[in-house]
Length: 49
Image (cartoon, rainbow, N blue to C red):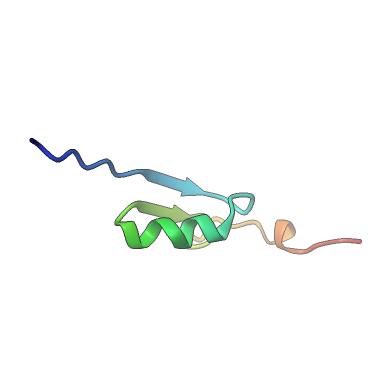
């Protein structure tokens, strides 16, 4: 029986749950965040009340 490996390639933004990124990375999935790419938008990180 042949083992099939599936790897996800994701490009996530500020709205994607960080915990999901942290859980998928150890499984050798290719995940790039906008923060790591230097494309993040600081206005999403500032919560206004």
